[in-house]
Length: 70
Image (cartoon, rainbow, N blue to C red; front, side, top):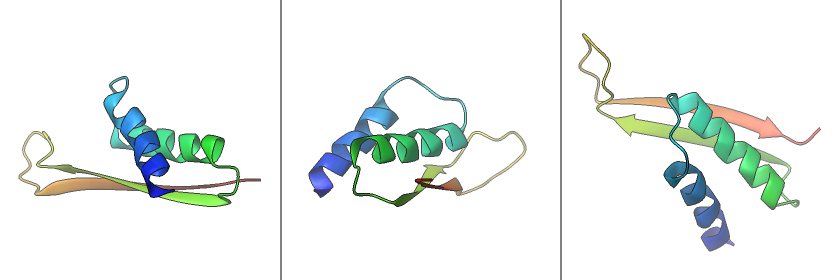
């Protein structure tokens, strides 16, 4: 269900701090594959509004990862 999926993502996002968006997206994808055996592949996109990148005025930074069962 979407509520279980939401809780899984929330646990990752509100859990231990990660320095990179890539680490957050990878953790979400891996956790979804662990908890939902029926899922064959997952694409996780994480977007941070107004990232603190020195010398840059970006509206947002995003990263997307794709993981699948082998």
